[in-house]
Length: 66
Image (cartoon, rainbow, N blue to C red; front, top):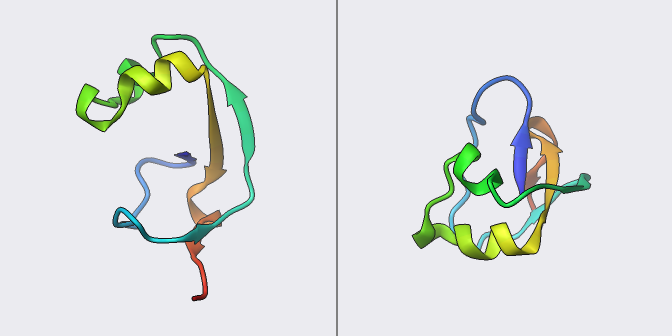
């Protein structure tokens, strides 16, 4: 998921945290991971081959109720 809006999100989400959001599935080319700073350790290869990602406003993502 890419959080879009003004600058970086002030939210920090830890791996394994459930979140809810409304977003849009967006297509991208193979250079997208490099453009947005996704490293190989973070899954750049998978993201490049998937050619899609979800976008949501940074203010639109929130931790889910458990």
